[in-house]
Image (cartoon, rainbow, N blue to C red):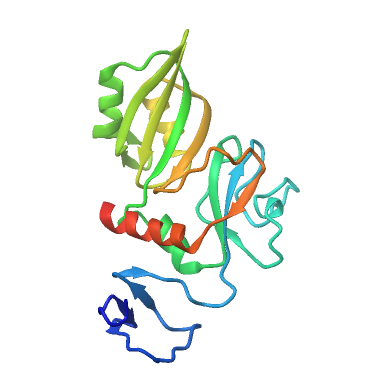
Length: 218
């Protein structure tokens, strides 16, 4: 890969036998970052209900960090509100955190929402085209009804940003309050085998997939 020119260090083509400082060097393969700094860790947690997405909580509630005992200081990448469930990444890699959370990179998050009522095509179209919230307009990348249960419906909604309680507020704005909300994917990363409260390590290749997906979306 180095001979083929696919590897760069700090924006310049790498060469065989080159030495780098892993604490400062920016290494890319095929223009996708390759984390090389020693001690970087990445975890994927399925956050249960009533767990807060912070490193600590003044009210003494259980935090996502407490559920992932990696033996080093880590932080959640973005947030899920206390009454929401699903996938959240925890890491000590500030570059990945910024990449996933900043809207300009376009890393999508996919949610399944159990809502009250039966959203019409007009309602899901409004979600895609944009609804006005108290902090500005918000639009989903995609929104569709995937199942119905009596007077309740299951809506899949894909977002490229993550303002506070945004998905809940959008669905309430179109007349369908959320009864349960689960994040099922972060970019290309999903894993139905992880039960609530369980976690696993993310691989470096999965981290690179996130970078690739963000760049292609953005």
